Image 1: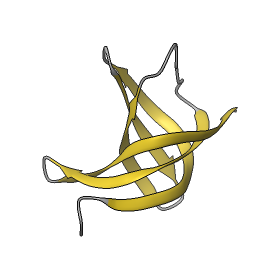
Image 2 (image 1 turned 180 degrees about the vertical axis):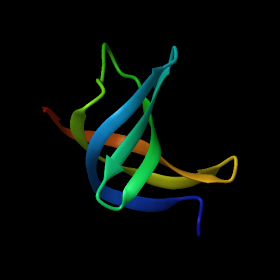
Image 3 (image 1 turned 45 degrees about the vertical axis):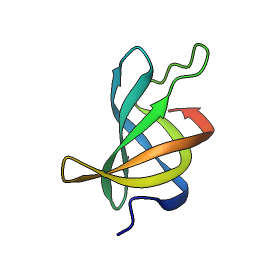
Image 4 (image 1 turned 90 degrees about the vertical axis):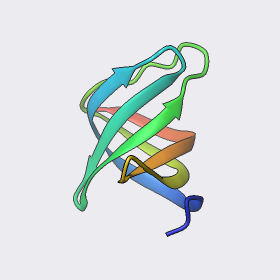
Length: 79
């Protein structure tokens, strides 16, 4: 697996949000499983647990685990 494989239109429900000064680290769950996604914060971006989002970005490996480094947050919907 390349460290720069592009992932398009991954949708899921946020199960965890960790906020750092420049990043949001979220767990995103769909019917196939759960993955961590890294979103670089812009302006006053906030995401909430149980929110459904669609992202695209790069699939990377970090500490032996697959993660998505999101380039684009496409849609948001509160459940």
